[in-house]
Image (tube, rainbow, N blue to C red):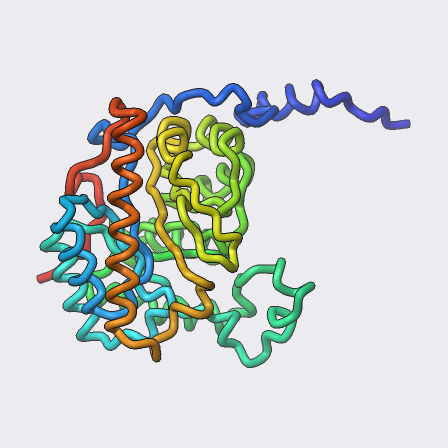
Length: 318
């Protein structure tokens, strides 16, 4: 007869695997930083048009805020004309901003994907259905790579494993990076370790992850975490501005993610005007400035990277 293990035994087993047996309720400071010694950086999502990038840079210059990463084509890179993508890559290289493209949401676009449209089917997430949708996603990525883009959002563990193998084998450029999406639903040190082992370069845990959980993830992996400081209403609408110093201290190296709005389904549509997206982007940059102010007031010892740190993966252009 099997005798159930005590909680303490379970915790000790996890610790032998290099995993914390409990969340970091003592709120420890992270022992690591970005290569430049900084604790936090700024990430802006929602560059749906080429003009949106220019609006982001213009607003950032007004308040002298460094922008380190732009999440582009959240509505799907299929909607961006190739020449606009080339222009975006060139400007991002000039401005020293890392670009992460969001490839088309193949499960959401799949005419056979019925369960995703129902309440009990949504917890499955946007993972891909079948080989066709995997190859469509990769073909769309190839189009972006040809334009010079070298960063991509991934939300399927199987695809991440395949992409890492492509990178290792030189099937795609060796410098390509992969960011794990919030839609992948990972929010534990075990999940984070899996993603890092599969080749993820940076990770976005779920938007409501607590400080102790952030601490437990940081104790397990070295890759940067991308943490929502403001999130769209459909994800809960949290605004964690006054937690920003603690997030930076505990989760360093961390990107502050700035994504206000009603819902991603509402705002990331290619038929919403570029001018409207320009205004949304400017508001996100201004929120980034507020986060910097709060961190500087309370925890001035925490460092924000300057514009264009050397470890960013920038687009490759001729």
